[in-house]
Image (cartoon, rainbow, N blue to C red):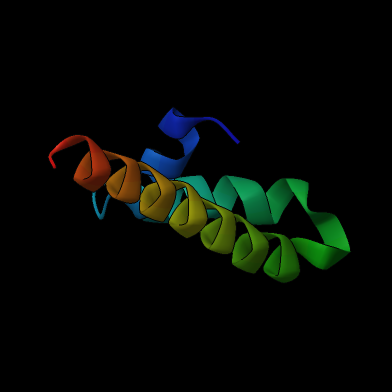
Length: 57
């Protein structure tokens, strides 16, 4: 997942659209793919925030 994809998932203005796309292309496992994508987007965001905090020291 790219940072831009993570942003689209986490940004309230684009969440619904992005998750609908993931669900559609996920087929029978669409809901599972949506949850996995949200988890990955959160991991990316946390990683970036931790790196930012470390750089601010």
